[in-house]
Amino acid sequence: DCLPRLHKPITASSIIRSNGKMKNRRLPPIRPSIFSSSNNSQPLVPSEANSLLYPPTSSSLPSALQLYINSDCPSHGRKIHSHIIKSGFEPNTNISIKLLILYIKSGCLAYARKVFDELPTQTLSAYNYMISGYIKDNQVLECLSLVRRLSISNGKPDGFTFSMILKASTCEIVLPVASSLAKQVHAQVVKSNVEADDVLFTGLVDSYVKCGRVDYARRVFDMVLEKNVVCSTSMISGYMNQGSVEEAEYIFKRTQEKDVVVYNAMIEGYSKSLETAQRALEVYIDMLRLNYGPTISTFASIIGACSVLSAFEIGQQVQAQLLKTQFFTDIKMGSAFIDMYSKCGRTEEARRVFDHMPKRNVFTWTSMIDGYGKNGNPEEALVLFSQMRRDQRTEPNCITFLSALSACGHAGLVAKGQEIFHSMKRDYSMKPKMEHYACMVDLLGRAGSLNEAWQFVITMPEKPNSDVWAALLSACRLHDDVELANIAANEIFKLSNDGRPGAYVALSNTLAASGKWDSVSEVRDLMKVRGVSKDTGCSWVGTDSGLEGFHVGQKM
Image (cartoon, rainbow, N blue to C red):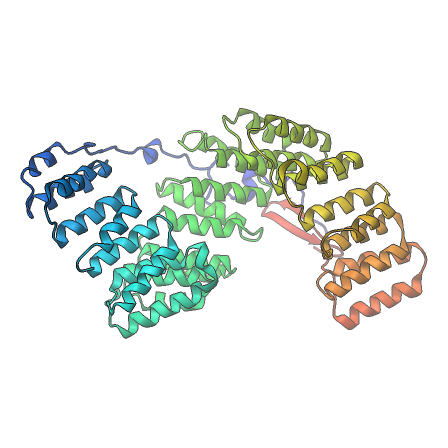
């Protein structure tokens, strides 16, 4: 038995073989026509509206208002409301609803609500317009308050009302009760005999998916006679998020009329896992060959797949394709490439992207700092962190500080790490999280300052979690401190009996290094009693068929 011939870290040819998926080891070209768009703008202010105002009548005013509603600048139509008030004209319900729509389209929801409240009869269409306006402005609580008012007034919601409520249920502010809200809407739809159209079915599916009830979503999905692409995309995203790749593939294959969004859902889902990332590249290539233009979401996902696969060669081809699009200067794309190149160990390419970016945000800086720190160049990471702080245009966030502290740990710069840690609260009013405390314990432990690390742990303002104790245990293992290792390990076992098998192994190894074999046997017996087992270590190697994992003792 022998190992297969080894290669460099994964290449373009090893990702996609010459089976029609990739020709001449190159991704298919993107046609420039894909990104072309027409600009058919309407006139800013409809001049014909003025002729309809004199004199104001019940037939001329709705037409004048509609012209402004359909224009690029509906806010200019507010002068009609002023004219109505000054002329003493009493608007009917039709005119009032047109004013309501005008204010909603102008983004003046306070005025729209005033018009709504002054309506002599608040019709269902008026409720629907107002609810829709609140949803578009992300005023979810106001929207739900209005829905309750409709119910109290014995009004009967229609399919549009229910679809708006379902849209509200997917907003972050109501996610804790989203499942209950979706089920209530579903029940009301059934009870009220509302004709469920594609929009309502799609809303139900999307709402159930986003609150984690993919099983309910599938039941609704199966009831839809004509599966639309939006509904299919929601189901695919739901299955991918819970790891049901085969179910997502089944829905994708059954989707008759595909668009770029449904392809994006498949690519994003595949890109999250090493086992499926290769398929993300294959779907991306199929999409290009069918002349679907990649969006910024497509590029973000495919760059993520390259990161997972350490496929920097394909990442370079994606970067070349991005150059031909309007997304090239997008700050998200630059940050994604920096992260990808850093994870592939190509910090020079990452820095080249960083230096050529016209604008940078906190994620850009953090990706580059973290890339230097994790690729054995902590000094450069700290230089960049200092530059970021001097720059003053971008403030570091908690992840930036974590990357900087980690770099200090690898460089053995205890004083620098302490200064950075204290500056979080002093200079940025940022409360350190458990990850930052664990990083400080690791920093002190690596430097051999175990007593200082112990004092740091016991004087923490909050109760240390298992990450903090694990950092201390790791330091004890490094410096063979059996007594302190026992304390740290016991604290971990109190917090989680079976959640950290590495803690048992670290304690066992520390005891073994000190020759305390009886204690080693006790720890191993304890692992058996508690059913704790450590995963076998493996190495990922690029072969002819792509990345493959090789475990200890594995025969080929």
